Image (tube, rainbow, N blue to C red; front, side, top):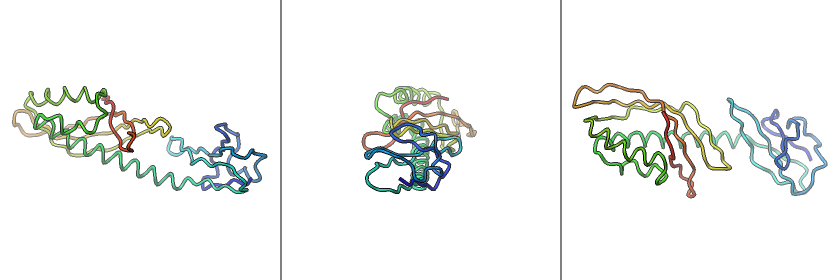
Length: 193
């Protein structure tokens, strides 16, 4: 078969085994058994990107397209950013009104972060602290589509005032563990600072 790609330097895999061949060198590749699965892996910005998987049938040409994956990765990062921004804004409301229900929908029920934040919200509220969310920036993230689990590290900036004093901006660097739920939504499972 003839294999080509928009990422010709990607490594070619057949049936989950590295062939040791780059896609650009896979012209007239074979013999290969029918019903085999072909895909490629490339590295971009230090992350391995796995192409879609292609089942071999009687076709003699396969084009491995990474462009679609770039778009879906950008969409995924945007989805993570929206989740984290909304969570941080609602975290400030939860603290200001001593109401964990503002943030509980962002968590997997009874997860580590669920249990931690359930105690953190009233603790901060009792300190006389008022918060306002300013911004977040994703520094890095990883997601394993096979397990539906990942991690994201971000910087979060909040204005924080204690006992009605003038608020000061504080920056927090947090790493969240997350999973894609059965319904396709992302839920947070843990937090580390």
